[in-house]
Length: 441
Image 1: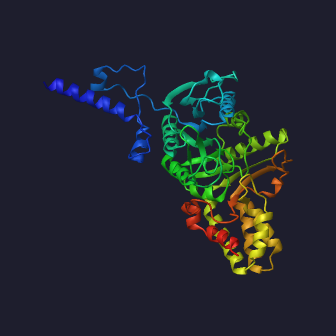
Image 2: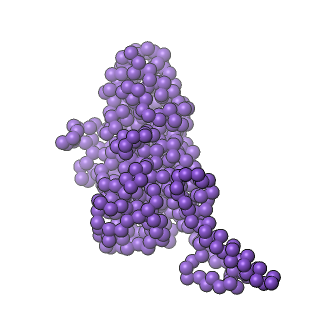
Image 3: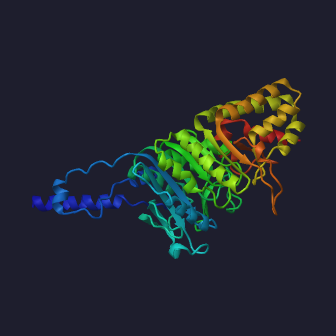
Protein backbone atom coordinates (compact mmCIF):
# COMPACT_ATOMS: atom_id res chain seq x y z
CA UNK A 1 0.00 0.00 0.00
CA UNK A 2 2.79 2.39 0.89
CA UNK A 3 4.53 1.53 -2.40
CA UNK A 4 1.38 2.15 -4.42
CA UNK A 5 0.80 5.50 -2.72
CA UNK A 6 4.39 6.54 -3.40
CA UNK A 7 4.08 5.67 -7.07
CA UNK A 8 0.82 7.58 -7.30
CA UNK A 9 2.40 10.62 -5.72
CA UNK A 10 5.28 10.43 -8.20
CA UNK A 11 2.87 10.22 -11.12
CA UNK A 12 0.89 13.20 -9.89
CA UNK A 13 4.12 15.17 -9.47
CA UNK A 14 5.29 14.21 -12.94
CA UNK A 15 2.11 15.29 -14.69
CA UNK A 16 1.96 18.49 -12.65
CA UNK A 17 5.49 19.35 -13.79
CA UNK A 18 4.64 18.76 -17.42
CA UNK A 19 1.45 20.80 -17.16
CA UNK A 20 3.34 23.65 -15.55
CA UNK A 21 5.54 24.00 -18.63
CA UNK A 22 2.58 25.12 -20.74
CA UNK A 23 1.69 28.79 -20.95
CA UNK A 24 -1.75 30.27 -21.51
CA UNK A 25 -1.44 33.65 -23.19
CA UNK A 26 -5.09 34.58 -23.10
CA UNK A 27 -5.14 38.19 -21.87
CA UNK A 28 -8.03 37.54 -19.51
CA UNK A 29 -7.59 36.83 -15.80
CA UNK A 30 -4.29 35.25 -15.00
CA UNK A 31 -1.16 36.05 -13.04
CA UNK A 32 1.35 37.37 -15.61
CA UNK A 33 4.39 36.78 -13.40
CA UNK A 34 3.38 33.20 -12.68
CA UNK A 35 2.73 32.50 -16.37
CA UNK A 36 6.07 33.92 -17.49
CA UNK A 37 7.96 32.16 -14.73
CA UNK A 38 6.34 28.89 -15.80
CA UNK A 39 7.77 29.34 -19.27
CA UNK A 40 11.22 28.58 -17.87
CA UNK A 41 10.28 25.21 -16.37
CA UNK A 42 12.73 22.58 -17.62
CA UNK A 43 11.17 19.78 -19.66
CA UNK A 44 13.04 16.42 -19.80
CA UNK A 45 14.67 15.65 -23.12
CA UNK A 46 12.56 13.42 -25.32
CA UNK A 47 15.40 10.90 -25.59
CA UNK A 48 15.77 10.45 -21.86
CA UNK A 49 14.50 7.30 -20.15
CA UNK A 50 11.57 8.29 -17.96
CA UNK A 51 11.20 4.98 -16.20
CA UNK A 52 9.61 4.96 -12.78
CA UNK A 53 12.91 4.19 -11.02
CA UNK A 54 14.40 7.33 -12.52
CA UNK A 55 11.55 9.35 -11.10
CA UNK A 56 11.80 7.57 -7.74
CA UNK A 57 15.54 7.57 -7.21
CA UNK A 58 16.74 10.11 -9.74
CA UNK A 59 19.55 10.00 -12.27
CA UNK A 60 22.93 11.61 -11.93
CA UNK A 61 22.51 15.33 -12.54
CA UNK A 62 23.54 16.35 -16.07
CA UNK A 63 26.47 18.63 -16.52
CA UNK A 64 25.34 22.27 -16.50
CA UNK A 65 25.06 23.80 -19.95
CA UNK A 66 28.16 25.72 -20.97
CA UNK A 67 27.73 29.46 -20.65
CA UNK A 68 28.31 31.20 -23.99
CA UNK A 69 29.73 34.66 -24.45
CA UNK A 70 26.57 35.94 -26.13
CA UNK A 71 22.99 34.86 -26.64
CA UNK A 72 21.29 36.91 -29.33
CA UNK A 73 17.50 36.66 -29.16
CA UNK A 74 15.37 37.73 -32.13
CA UNK A 75 11.61 38.17 -31.68
CA UNK A 76 10.26 38.40 -35.21
CA UNK A 77 6.57 38.85 -36.00
CA UNK A 78 6.13 38.19 -39.71
CA UNK A 79 2.35 38.13 -39.34
CA UNK A 80 1.98 41.06 -41.71
CA UNK A 81 3.28 42.44 -44.98
CA UNK A 82 6.89 42.08 -43.79
CA UNK A 83 6.72 38.27 -43.94
CA UNK A 84 8.94 38.02 -47.02
CA UNK A 85 11.62 40.25 -45.51
CA UNK A 86 11.65 38.65 -42.08
CA UNK A 87 12.05 35.20 -43.65
CA UNK A 88 15.00 36.62 -45.58
CA UNK A 89 16.38 37.84 -42.26
CA UNK A 90 16.30 34.32 -40.85
CA UNK A 91 18.21 33.00 -43.84
CA UNK A 92 20.74 35.81 -43.40
CA UNK A 93 21.20 34.62 -39.82
CA UNK A 94 21.80 31.10 -41.14
CA UNK A 95 24.58 32.39 -43.38
CA UNK A 96 26.54 32.82 -40.12
CA UNK A 97 24.86 30.50 -37.61
CA UNK A 98 25.49 29.95 -33.93
CA UNK A 99 28.85 28.89 -32.55
CA UNK A 100 30.09 27.40 -29.31
CA UNK A 101 30.37 30.92 -27.92
CA UNK A 102 27.46 32.70 -29.61
CA UNK A 103 23.88 31.43 -29.45
CA UNK A 104 21.40 32.82 -31.96
CA UNK A 105 17.77 31.99 -31.20
CA UNK A 106 14.63 33.28 -32.86
CA UNK A 107 10.89 33.24 -32.37
CA UNK A 108 9.12 33.87 -35.65
CA UNK A 109 5.44 33.95 -36.56
CA UNK A 110 3.66 33.68 -39.92
CA UNK A 111 0.11 33.87 -41.24
CA UNK A 112 -1.52 33.09 -44.58
CA UNK A 113 -1.75 35.63 -47.32
CA UNK A 114 1.61 37.29 -47.86
CA UNK A 115 4.40 34.84 -48.69
CA UNK A 116 4.20 31.14 -49.53
CA UNK A 117 7.90 30.26 -49.42
CA UNK A 118 9.51 27.62 -47.19
CA UNK A 119 6.45 25.37 -47.12
CA UNK A 120 4.02 28.22 -46.35
CA UNK A 121 3.83 27.11 -42.73
CA UNK A 122 1.85 29.23 -40.30
CA UNK A 123 1.97 29.77 -36.57
CA UNK A 124 4.81 30.75 -34.25
CA UNK A 125 8.02 28.73 -33.95
CA UNK A 126 11.23 28.90 -31.97
CA UNK A 127 14.53 28.11 -33.69
CA UNK A 128 18.14 27.62 -32.73
CA UNK A 129 19.93 29.18 -35.69
CA UNK A 130 22.63 27.06 -37.31
CA UNK A 131 24.74 27.67 -40.40
CA UNK A 132 23.06 26.79 -43.67
CA UNK A 133 23.88 27.68 -47.28
CA UNK A 134 20.29 27.40 -48.58
CA UNK A 135 18.93 30.95 -48.80
CA UNK A 136 15.40 29.88 -49.73
CA UNK A 137 14.33 27.95 -46.66
CA UNK A 138 15.14 27.40 -43.01
CA UNK A 139 17.55 24.60 -42.19
CA UNK A 140 17.84 25.32 -38.48
CA UNK A 141 16.31 23.08 -35.86
CA UNK A 142 12.82 24.02 -34.78
CA UNK A 143 12.83 23.86 -30.99
CA UNK A 144 9.18 24.53 -30.30
CA UNK A 145 5.96 24.99 -32.23
CA UNK A 146 4.05 27.55 -30.18
CA UNK A 147 0.84 27.42 -32.20
CA UNK A 148 -0.80 30.64 -33.33
CA UNK A 149 0.00 32.78 -30.29
CA UNK A 150 -0.35 36.57 -30.35
CA UNK A 151 2.98 38.25 -31.04
CA UNK A 152 1.36 41.60 -30.38
CA UNK A 153 0.94 40.57 -26.73
CA UNK A 154 3.88 41.79 -24.68
CA UNK A 155 3.60 38.76 -22.42
CA UNK A 156 4.70 36.53 -25.29
CA UNK A 157 7.78 38.69 -25.83
CA UNK A 158 8.53 38.41 -22.12
CA UNK A 159 8.05 34.64 -22.18
CA UNK A 160 10.39 34.29 -25.17
CA UNK A 161 13.12 36.32 -23.48
CA UNK A 162 12.81 34.40 -20.21
CA UNK A 163 12.90 31.07 -22.05
CA UNK A 164 15.90 32.02 -24.22
CA UNK A 165 17.96 33.20 -21.25
CA UNK A 166 17.18 30.02 -19.31
CA UNK A 167 17.74 27.63 -22.22
CA UNK A 168 20.84 29.36 -23.65
CA UNK A 169 22.71 31.00 -20.76
CA UNK A 170 25.41 33.50 -21.65
CA UNK A 171 27.57 36.17 -20.12
CA UNK A 172 25.86 38.82 -22.26
CA UNK A 173 22.48 39.11 -23.98
CA UNK A 174 21.08 41.03 -26.91
CA UNK A 175 17.35 41.18 -27.66
CA UNK A 176 16.11 42.31 -31.06
CA UNK A 177 12.43 42.99 -31.80
CA UNK A 178 11.89 42.81 -35.55
CA UNK A 179 8.65 44.04 -37.12
CA UNK A 180 6.87 47.27 -37.93
CA UNK A 181 7.56 50.09 -35.50
CA UNK A 182 5.90 53.47 -35.16
CA UNK A 183 7.28 55.18 -32.09
CA UNK A 184 5.70 55.76 -28.72
CA UNK A 185 1.96 56.16 -28.97
CA UNK A 186 -0.59 53.93 -27.26
CA UNK A 187 -3.59 54.20 -29.56
CA UNK A 188 -7.00 52.58 -29.61
CA UNK A 189 -8.00 52.75 -33.25
CA UNK A 190 -6.57 50.86 -36.21
CA UNK A 191 -3.09 49.41 -36.57
CA UNK A 192 -2.05 52.24 -38.89
CA UNK A 193 -2.94 54.80 -36.22
CA UNK A 194 -1.44 52.98 -33.26
CA UNK A 195 2.17 53.50 -32.33
CA UNK A 196 4.38 50.82 -30.87
CA UNK A 197 6.07 47.70 -32.22
CA UNK A 198 5.47 44.03 -33.10
CA UNK A 199 2.22 44.29 -35.04
CA UNK A 200 0.26 41.04 -35.37
CA UNK A 201 -2.34 41.32 -38.11
CA UNK A 202 -4.09 38.14 -37.07
CA UNK A 203 -4.91 39.44 -33.60
CA UNK A 204 -4.96 43.14 -34.53
CA UNK A 205 -2.72 43.67 -31.54
CA UNK A 206 0.69 45.26 -31.00
CA UNK A 207 3.10 46.03 -28.17
CA UNK A 208 2.77 49.63 -27.08
CA UNK A 209 5.52 51.53 -25.31
CA UNK A 210 4.46 50.94 -21.68
CA UNK A 211 4.01 47.24 -22.51
CA UNK A 212 7.50 47.10 -24.04
CA UNK A 213 8.81 48.40 -20.74
CA UNK A 214 6.88 45.73 -18.84
CA UNK A 215 8.18 42.95 -21.10
CA UNK A 216 11.81 43.98 -20.62
CA UNK A 217 11.39 44.20 -16.86
CA UNK A 218 10.09 40.63 -16.83
CA UNK A 219 12.90 39.35 -19.04
CA UNK A 220 15.54 40.84 -16.77
CA UNK A 221 18.70 42.69 -17.66
CA UNK A 222 19.62 42.79 -21.35
CA UNK A 223 22.98 44.20 -22.37
CA UNK A 224 21.92 45.43 -25.80
CA UNK A 225 18.37 46.03 -27.02
CA UNK A 226 17.75 46.59 -30.71
CA UNK A 227 14.63 47.45 -32.65
CA UNK A 228 14.83 46.23 -36.23
CA UNK A 229 11.84 48.45 -36.85
CA UNK A 230 10.89 51.98 -37.81
CA UNK A 231 10.88 55.16 -35.73
CA UNK A 232 11.76 53.67 -32.34
CA UNK A 233 14.82 55.72 -31.33
CA UNK A 234 13.05 58.46 -29.41
CA UNK A 235 13.04 59.84 -25.88
CA UNK A 236 9.61 58.45 -25.05
CA UNK A 237 10.69 54.89 -25.88
CA UNK A 238 14.19 54.86 -24.41
CA UNK A 239 12.97 56.34 -21.13
CA UNK A 240 10.44 53.52 -20.77
CA UNK A 241 13.10 50.79 -21.06
CA UNK A 242 16.20 52.49 -19.61
CA UNK A 243 16.34 50.45 -16.40
CA UNK A 244 16.24 47.06 -18.16
CA UNK A 245 18.99 47.53 -20.75
CA UNK A 246 22.50 48.97 -21.03
CA UNK A 247 22.59 50.02 -24.69
CA UNK A 248 19.80 50.79 -27.15
CA UNK A 249 20.09 50.48 -30.95
CA UNK A 250 17.39 52.05 -33.09
CA UNK A 251 16.38 54.33 -35.93
CA UNK A 252 14.78 57.78 -35.73
CA UNK A 253 13.40 57.30 -39.25
CA UNK A 254 11.67 54.40 -40.95
CA UNK A 255 13.76 51.39 -41.90
CA UNK A 256 13.56 49.76 -45.35
CA UNK A 257 11.62 46.49 -45.42
CA UNK A 258 14.90 44.58 -45.50
CA UNK A 259 15.92 46.13 -42.16
CA UNK A 260 19.05 44.64 -40.62
CA UNK A 261 21.41 42.70 -42.87
CA UNK A 262 21.95 39.97 -40.30
CA UNK A 263 24.90 38.25 -41.94
CA UNK A 264 26.82 41.55 -41.97
CA UNK A 265 25.92 42.14 -38.33
CA UNK A 266 26.49 38.64 -36.94
CA UNK A 267 29.62 37.63 -38.86
CA UNK A 268 32.00 39.82 -36.84
CA UNK A 269 30.25 38.90 -33.58
CA UNK A 270 30.79 35.18 -34.14
CA UNK A 271 34.37 35.89 -35.25
CA UNK A 272 35.00 37.90 -32.07
CA UNK A 273 32.63 36.58 -29.39
CA UNK A 274 34.45 38.49 -26.66
CA UNK A 275 32.97 41.75 -27.96
CA UNK A 276 31.81 44.01 -25.15
CA UNK A 277 28.19 45.18 -25.18
CA UNK A 278 29.39 48.59 -26.37
CA UNK A 279 31.34 47.00 -29.22
CA UNK A 280 28.39 44.85 -30.22
CA UNK A 281 26.03 47.83 -30.16
CA UNK A 282 28.37 49.75 -32.44
CA UNK A 283 28.69 46.71 -34.69
CA UNK A 284 24.90 46.62 -35.09
CA UNK A 285 24.77 50.30 -36.06
CA UNK A 286 27.74 50.11 -38.42
CA UNK A 287 26.57 46.94 -40.17
CA UNK A 288 23.22 48.57 -40.86
CA UNK A 289 24.65 51.90 -42.00
CA UNK A 290 27.41 50.36 -44.12
CA UNK A 291 24.87 48.26 -46.01
CA UNK A 292 22.60 51.18 -46.88
CA UNK A 293 25.56 53.41 -47.69
CA UNK A 294 26.67 50.84 -50.26
CA UNK A 295 23.31 50.94 -52.03
CA UNK A 296 23.01 54.74 -51.64
CA UNK A 297 19.84 54.64 -49.58
CA UNK A 298 19.02 57.26 -46.96
CA UNK A 299 18.98 56.04 -43.38
CA UNK A 300 19.34 56.80 -39.68
CA UNK A 301 20.68 54.40 -37.03
CA UNK A 302 22.12 55.17 -33.62
CA UNK A 303 23.32 53.73 -30.31
CA UNK A 304 22.18 55.26 -27.02
CA UNK A 305 23.59 54.73 -23.53
CA UNK A 306 20.71 53.78 -21.24
CA UNK A 307 22.46 55.01 -18.09
CA UNK A 308 22.42 58.54 -19.55
CA UNK A 309 18.68 58.65 -20.20
CA UNK A 310 17.86 60.02 -16.74
CA UNK A 311 20.11 62.99 -17.44
CA UNK A 312 18.36 63.46 -20.80
CA UNK A 313 15.22 64.07 -18.77
CA UNK A 314 17.01 66.63 -16.60
CA UNK A 315 18.65 68.65 -19.37
CA UNK A 316 15.55 68.59 -21.59
CA UNK A 317 13.41 69.76 -18.65
CA UNK A 318 15.81 72.64 -18.01
CA UNK A 319 15.76 73.58 -21.69
CA UNK A 320 11.96 73.41 -21.94
CA UNK A 321 11.57 75.49 -18.79
CA UNK A 322 13.95 78.13 -20.15
CA UNK A 323 12.07 78.36 -23.46
CA UNK A 324 8.68 78.67 -21.74
CA UNK A 325 10.03 81.31 -19.35
CA UNK A 326 11.48 83.30 -22.25
CA UNK A 327 8.10 83.80 -23.87
CA UNK A 328 9.63 83.08 -27.30
CA UNK A 329 6.67 81.01 -28.42
CA UNK A 330 6.72 82.22 -32.02
CA UNK A 331 10.37 81.19 -32.33
CA UNK A 332 9.59 77.83 -30.72
CA UNK A 333 6.85 77.17 -33.29
CA UNK A 334 8.95 78.12 -36.29
CA UNK A 335 11.92 76.14 -34.92
CA UNK A 336 9.73 73.09 -34.36
CA UNK A 337 8.28 73.26 -37.86
CA UNK A 338 11.74 73.62 -39.43
CA UNK A 339 13.33 70.83 -37.39
CA UNK A 340 14.16 67.63 -39.27
CA UNK A 341 11.25 65.25 -38.91
CA UNK A 342 10.50 61.68 -39.93
CA UNK A 343 7.74 59.55 -41.43
CA UNK A 344 5.59 60.29 -38.39
CA UNK A 345 5.90 64.03 -38.92
CA UNK A 346 5.46 64.89 -35.24
CA UNK A 347 8.63 62.91 -34.46
CA UNK A 348 11.48 65.41 -34.67
CA UNK A 349 15.16 65.39 -33.78
CA UNK A 350 15.87 66.85 -30.33
CA UNK A 351 19.32 68.21 -31.18
CA UNK A 352 18.17 69.96 -34.33
CA UNK A 353 15.33 71.68 -32.47
CA UNK A 354 17.66 72.88 -29.71
CA UNK A 355 20.15 74.11 -32.34
CA UNK A 356 17.50 76.20 -34.07
CA UNK A 357 16.36 77.69 -30.77
CA UNK A 358 19.93 78.55 -29.76
CA UNK A 359 20.59 80.23 -33.10
CA UNK A 360 17.37 82.26 -33.06
CA UNK A 361 16.85 83.12 -29.40
CA UNK A 362 17.58 86.47 -27.80
CA UNK A 363 17.42 84.93 -24.33
CA UNK A 364 20.70 84.02 -22.61
CA UNK A 365 19.18 81.18 -20.58
CA UNK A 366 17.62 79.58 -23.66
CA UNK A 367 20.99 79.71 -25.39
CA UNK A 368 22.75 78.25 -22.34
CA UNK A 369 20.26 75.44 -21.72
CA UNK A 370 19.86 74.67 -25.41
CA UNK A 371 23.61 74.34 -25.90
CA UNK A 372 23.78 72.12 -22.81
CA UNK A 373 21.17 69.81 -24.32
CA UNK A 374 23.02 69.69 -27.63
CA UNK A 375 26.34 68.95 -25.93
CA UNK A 376 24.77 66.22 -23.82
CA UNK A 377 23.17 64.47 -26.79
CA UNK A 378 26.33 64.31 -28.88
CA UNK A 379 28.82 64.00 -26.03
CA UNK A 380 27.17 61.59 -23.61
CA UNK A 381 23.83 60.08 -24.62
CA UNK A 382 24.58 59.02 -28.19
CA UNK A 383 27.58 56.73 -28.49
CA UNK A 384 27.32 56.35 -32.26
CA UNK A 385 25.10 58.01 -34.85
CA UNK A 386 25.13 57.10 -38.54
CA UNK A 387 23.03 58.88 -41.16
CA UNK A 388 22.83 59.26 -44.91
CA UNK A 389 20.76 61.91 -46.64
CA UNK A 390 17.81 60.64 -48.62
CA UNK A 391 17.29 61.74 -52.22
CA UNK A 392 13.53 61.42 -51.95
CA UNK A 393 11.19 59.73 -54.35
CA UNK A 394 7.59 59.46 -55.45
CA UNK A 395 6.10 59.85 -51.98
CA UNK A 396 8.46 62.33 -50.37
CA UNK A 397 11.15 64.86 -51.11
CA UNK A 398 14.82 64.81 -50.10
CA UNK A 399 15.69 64.54 -46.42
CA UNK A 400 18.79 65.99 -44.75
CA UNK A 401 19.31 63.23 -42.22
CA UNK A 402 22.73 64.68 -41.45
CA UNK A 403 20.79 67.12 -39.23
CA UNK A 404 19.56 64.23 -37.06
CA UNK A 405 21.86 63.42 -34.17
CA UNK A 406 20.33 60.15 -33.01
CA UNK A 407 17.44 60.92 -30.64
CA UNK A 408 13.95 62.03 -31.62
CA UNK A 409 11.10 63.27 -29.45
CA UNK A 410 7.41 63.95 -29.92
CA UNK A 411 6.57 67.50 -31.02
CA UNK A 412 2.76 67.60 -31.36
CA UNK A 413 1.35 69.93 -34.01
CA UNK A 414 -1.82 70.46 -31.99
CA UNK A 415 -3.04 68.45 -29.00
CA UNK A 416 -1.09 65.65 -27.35
CA UNK A 417 -1.61 62.23 -28.92
CA UNK A 418 -3.84 59.58 -27.40
CA UNK A 419 -2.19 57.96 -24.39
CA UNK A 420 0.84 60.26 -24.24
CA UNK A 421 0.25 61.08 -20.60
CA UNK A 422 0.48 57.37 -19.76
CA UNK A 423 4.15 57.26 -20.73
CA UNK A 424 6.82 57.28 -18.04
CA UNK A 425 8.54 60.10 -19.95
CA UNK A 426 5.42 62.28 -19.89
CA UNK A 427 4.87 61.62 -16.19
CA UNK A 428 8.45 62.49 -15.25
CA UNK A 429 9.28 65.27 -17.71
CA UNK A 430 7.94 68.66 -18.73
CA UNK A 431 7.77 67.64 -22.38
CA UNK A 432 3.98 67.29 -22.39
CA UNK A 433 3.58 70.73 -20.81
CA UNK A 434 6.11 72.10 -23.29
CA UNK A 435 4.26 70.63 -26.27
CA UNK A 436 0.96 72.01 -25.01
CA UNK A 437 2.52 75.45 -24.41
CA UNK A 438 3.90 75.70 -27.95
CA UNK A 439 0.47 75.00 -29.42
CA UNK A 440 -1.43 77.50 -27.31
CA UNK A 441 -2.39 80.82 -28.98
